[in-house]
Amino acid sequence: MEFKLLGPFEARHEGAPLLTDSRRQERCLLSILLLDAGHVVTTGRLIDLLWDGEANASARGTVHTYVGRLRAALRTGRGPRIETRHDGYVLEADGYEVDARDFVPLARAAADATDPAERIRLGDRALALWRGPLLADVAGDRLRERLGGHLDALRLSTVELRAETQLSMGLHERVAADLTDLADEHPERERIVAARMTALYRADRAAEAVRLYDVTRHALSTRLGVEPGPDLTALHQRVLRRDPSLDRPPAPLYAVRVRDRWLPWNTSGHPALEFCNTYAGWGGPELPGSEWLRDYAALAVWAGHLDLAADHVVTRLLARARREPGEAAHVLAEAREFRGRLYACLTDPADTAAFEAVAGVAEAAARSSVFTRGGDGLGRWHVSPSAGLRLPLYATARSAADLLADPRRLVVRGCPGEECGWLFLDSGGRRRWCSLATCGASRRLRDGCATG
Image (cartoon, rainbow, N blue to C red):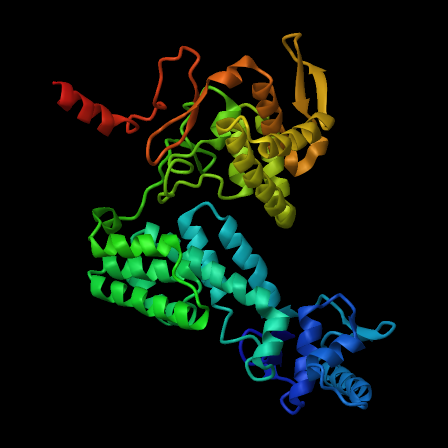
């Protein structure tokens, strides 16, 4: 049996439609159970959702009647059973297909895919399941938001990711066509607007890109009372001045490719500093490709690349992250927060709050550490596998704690490049810029001209 909820409600068994004579609220009740299959939905919640707080005294009896009719209809098609559990109902979770249930893993797999073509393929499969608004013919806007607001947010995120990937592959004509309606419908999703503006510019339709910005700005002002964000505003300015860099897909601004992940160049001389470093992350406005810590896999691979975790440990972590995507996403968020705190701690020794935040993670890492003897006979501290997916984060925190307790902490420098800010060790007191060839090049050139 197959159920479709992403658009008008449909139920089919072996291709034949079911529930065509059922009441709208009956189909809506079944949809609620389908969206929460395997879990008990109380009668009170069903009444609240179906009548939106305006139920009469007979609502409970009406729900029981609806459930009885649905049970009879589903038995005819050998569909899933609706069981009574205390003061509620639960729909068995297996033995049938639901488009909304298929959509979520496809969208998440697209977000996790490292190959651009695979990311687009999975995104296309996920988005192909959408035939219109959730339960378009049985739910109003308020109920639709309560039941599936998270699904629509995931859909838009998938659209954004797919469009940005297509732009990186030069498929701007397709992006310009695909986002025509969405950019107008969702001015608050500035990544969608930015993707279409970029696509229009690359298709020699710069005037349309400017007009789209103006329409979006007006919509944000009148609907939400806000102005476009800094990224969209900066893109608008680049379009107006015909910035040549908009004519081509942005390339990653890194030099190391490890296990299909782009990682930053190693320039600082210490793992804790490398963790903070990204070409455009700290010293100025973020440039395309500047965020290297895009997913948990990048964190694990980076830890292996910097010898903070053994290669076989990285392999196990990647497999576990695929099995537990929610936990991996949580750890990634912790790692990003730790990175910001660590950068603040290293660039401002007086930042007590940043130091205490770093110390808290370092103390947790210490509690998860073990001391073992290596093959060379030397003892070493390392984070135990019992740390689970936090192992790369804790290994980084141990490295950071070692640096903060070392006199070398006093010679940490931040590159003054306008779009850099990378950290490095300057033990000799002779360096001003980091190791990137671009940093300081224009200043050195100007200084040379002035003194030559």
